[in-house]
Image (cartoon, rainbow, N blue to C red; front, side, top):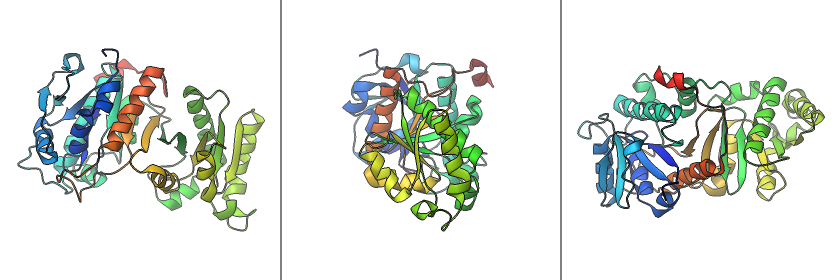
Amino acid sequence: MTDRPILAATMGDPAGIGPEICVRALLSSEVRDVSRSFVIGDARVLAKALAGCGLIAELNKIAGPETLVDRPGVIDVLHQDSADPDVLRMGQVQPLGGEAAYAAIRASIDLAMTQRVQGVVTAPINKESLQAAKIPFIGHTEMFAEHTGATEEMTMFTISGLKIFFLTRHMSLARACAAITVPNVTKGIDMCIKALRQLGYETPHLAVAALNPHGGEDGMFGREEIEGIKPAIAAARAKGLHISGPVPADSVFHLARIGRYDAVLSLYHDQGHIAAKMMDFERTVSVTLGLPVLRTSVDHGTAFDIAGTGKASAVSMIEAIRVAADYVVRGVKLGDAPVAAKAAE
């Protein structure tokens, strides 16, 4: 059992459901069977989460991953004195939530960059709380990119055997449409193919989703397919890559799910998110590509409306840990090797 990978789970926003899903996940046999995982965050918040969930467990404060107890009924915690439960307001946007979430993320990155953990699994954070705390990032991906030195990060969802990549992420729909250019689509295709090969697909078949209804109908419903997507696909095919598209978005995800394609390149945030979450909301896992460290995440928010009630499901957190552990065991590398000096900044 000692060859199970060591994974760090970040607590997420302490005012959300992150602490609840962390304690539930780390007490589960599904997580213990595949990993030696611990939580980074405030042990006082985690103790409150245990009580709220009606769970009994020992919270064991550790100095680092080298001192894990790793026993059933014990949750190892890298404690940060970051979110006093007597001050924290559950289910609300507040600077304390953003500050505590960011502190756990920074600690996890430092551990991963110095190879003291083999991967990081992140619980949900709240963008408004980050802004309230004046944290200069809008999400996890941007934090990981900045603090690891990554320059070509990309998001991938894995769900029921389907892989969905995202050409654009957190931007307005208008900006996302403007980003559908030949250079951007070409770069996106190349990153998808590289990732699929790293995941074990020798000759991956990638479908590029269309932007407009019916794929634009030869310019009747927009010219993005003609001007930004088709030339990039043609160039990729000329290099011998197996690329289909642009495939209308109302069918491409279903076709991939039944095996016609190995993966789909989604052009904007909701295009791929809606498809994945309709397939299986709880088991959709987000993987960040292009980083020098392994990072997976749940694909849901902080659920402030039920935070602190003990009702939150840990299925997605368990699945995110399972995926991370599987990638470690299989030796999957989705980015360059860590630069040790970066963690010392």
